[in-house]
Image (tube, rainbow, N blue to C red):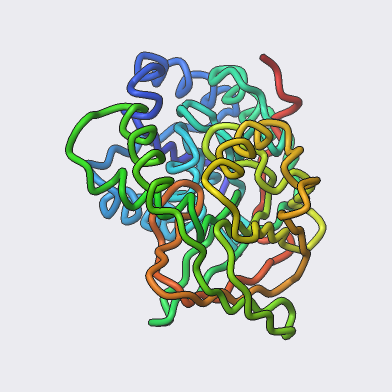
Length: 305
């Protein structure tokens, strides 16, 4: 519809509120597409999911999200597979999905680029991953799913009441390193079953998670495949030494780290809860399928710093 609005979902608490004052500027930049901008506010995750779902059903011209990977994750649940143009304004502490797709790093420039793309009808097709849990619930993700040491750390950190901020994760990492032990996984890659112990399992549609850790460095969100990275049982010392190499993706050259590619991945293990795009998703077992061209991304131009 020529007069359909742009729906904007913004997370004012992303990046600990660093970009909250830019919401008006982002909305003004989006309005340069010649359409009204409908800003959606949500008190919690459930309300945000309901808001984006309603917006898509109402027939908006595009859905744009302003926030980090968690906000992107919420938006994907509404637009995946619909063909509706989707814009990303990176404004979080972790913007791995936006960075992997080469989007502008500055929030206002990203919004301007999304507006130009919408006005010109310029989009590009991007793959997504579709996860099906044991109960049949479906969740889409755009970046990386963690199902090993990283997800165990997230579980501990989310249970902790104190301290707040990044130091909570540092404490959780230390606590789980002390308890480090391999888990027994059943991993099925395009129908081929592997039974093996591992300390780290990640499934990537794009390359990085956690604000720049390139866990799946060669993952390509346009190849119709998922990259699966596994780490064999290793000592606490080896895992600690391996962690800095995640920044460049050099960890995949370590003899205890293995990389696979598959269109369909099934994971099963006891006591593991998965996290995708930084969000808590489902306990194993899960089935993950690469869905080519599931996202119609507003092509807002090259990344700038």
